[in-house]
Picture 1 (cartoon, rainbow, N blue to C red):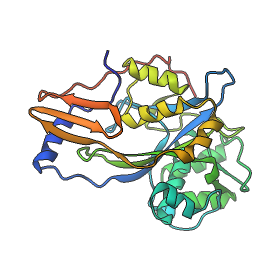
Picture 2 (tube, one colour):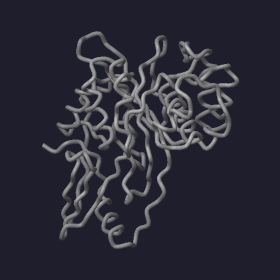
Picture 3 (cartoon, helix red, strand yellow):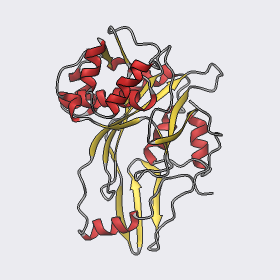
Picture 4 (cartoon, rainbow, N blue to C red):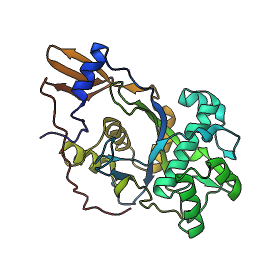
Length: 303
């Protein structure tokens, strides 16, 4: 049975155009995404918060993913309240300069708040905010989404510091050169703070679910859940962790070398591969391919 690998039908033609020199790759936009975990106490390991992108979305419509999005240019425009490892430490870990590191970490925290209502920040370096579902919080979240308020301004106004120590850098994947929408995405792991709860606050998602990484991967393997390769790869890594704390503790040892798909022509066949991840290799005949059609075995369980 085919798995649920997201594969747009226009890719073979774009790959051929790239090989022929008639397609110029677009520069990838920096982005961040966060795998929120919480323990269930059932012995089956932690569950991860996932959202299903609306089918109408131009990029990865219908695919399951994590909260995340692009870096806001204002995410690095000034110093913000910051707790945890220094910007220099993060720069080394993420493979960028210090301004870039602040922007990427800010994007991870900001997007998690914008899309899931979860905020990895607190009044002090050893505290975290509680319930963020009130009307005043929602007004600020909406202003962030509309870019009427920068994340630095939001933190400053509320007297909060970003808790970078609550994040663990997990992986980095770059959208293939032949894709029209490209992202250089850093994947982070974090535990759901006590007192907070997720909700579907994203206009880009039609469903959210808490699911064990093993169950999510099983759904993908059966062709029932549609996902992009980095989502599947990170889920397989998370499935090896017995608790959220174990996932966070293992993050510093994760390889952050960027993963970028390679495409080549072999006769009339397009061969698409992701270095280090052989399971995603695709052999596409000249006729092209039909993308997987997902169903939803989760029953639409809410966050």
